[in-house]
Length: 595
Image (cartoon, rainbow, N blue to C red; front, side, top):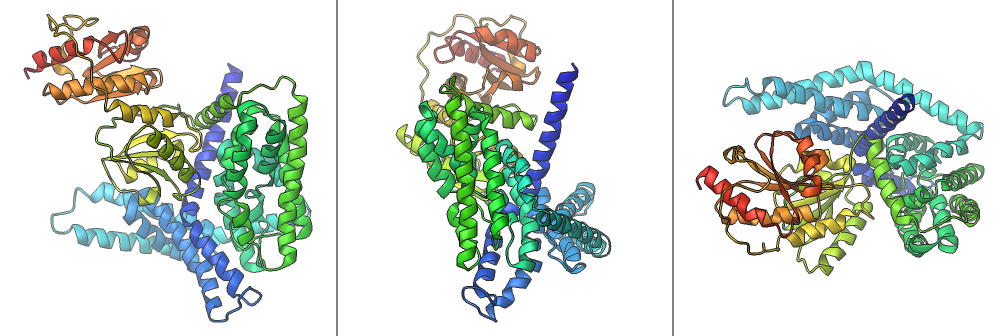
């Protein structure tokens, strides 16, 4: 019992860290383009840049001081309460920006969500009390006055505190660098990446601190700590030469995606396949950072994604800078390759467990958030587009869209598959939105009428095949069955009151596959018989005890479904795809509802 409690506590701590990190990085990631623009301006137009220009260089400081913090605050407020939250968040952030003498990224991360939360609470209390005709007046003045008040609070109260904290953090980084201890940070960074804290570490912590450092010294090594593609490259090379089965055959393609494309998530399953490879990643990260620090490497701005091309683009002018950056990447790759190669060659029991390791990565990530990998009761009727949505609308979501687009095309389905930033989603009831588990709630708030499927990893989710099955199922015609002689459904008792049924749920272990196809068959029967009862599918674990539900399950699962929702009416079938009970269910419902 004690061990179980400790495990749950660890999961809770990790889930909390991931949630906080994801929230912080979600304010930065959509605005990475602005950070890159500032980095390019700095690299080109300052006095020692590639194309020095005194007039154009005047954009550098205002962009850093005002534009970047305001964008962060605007995004944070929008995450909490849409456009009104974004506006109040940006107004509030002006207080910390003008009340301090440093770039106020941390302050913006505080004031943006705080402004959104305050205006949301105001609307919750007063929106029903505003008289007709005064809505616009109240909305505008409430946003302006709340933003004004928060800006004053930030100017005198929050700004100085955040400035003090920022100075302490900066001094801490300086002490670590001065003591040559910065490479030890990778002892935590490399495992954190594989535990899906990569965006939280890079964009939630290192990018704000690195930007402040780059503003004073022209570059920052902090931009290289998480983004270094060397350790991942070394591990994938080791699998290319010494791996087995599908892991060996897939590693060369993964190298292109990871090293050139900058999608580091692609190598996480390889490490989970052999947990000893955490040591290879740590050794590669530590040695790479040691070289960065030894040679004085640094980038002008954040490199996102962590592609070697993006890293070189953000490298300051000068041969020595390029040599320093490339040396750290190469050393990190070589060291991780050597360590990983030794581990793989010494493991005589190695078998082809790559597919299982991908599932382990997915489950481990979901469990760390206290989530269960499930699919919502999704109906794909009338879907005319599929959209992959993530923070930035690029990177891994673009890769996922490409993978599913190929599967959809091969299945003969004429449906566009694209990728988008969550903030750019439109509320489209005919769109199927594919997003990662931790982003699904944000996407649902942006497009509540859309259908959703949540995945753990955009690049290798088994749910893609299930989506294709769903889409194909919409074209399945139910097999003709004889008209029932009675209106009582098998496995249902005569006391079952079908008049109270408001929805039908097909329940199975995963909530996809054959249950989705069965739901599609019965849905068409229901519609053809003039009934307006929704028919969906769900995992048994997601069922709620509803007295107005009709649950259809396979015989071996009916007991579990009944235990989960004892108040519902239950129908047991042998096969979801060819069940004669469907016509009997429809006939009973028609009789009960007098259709």
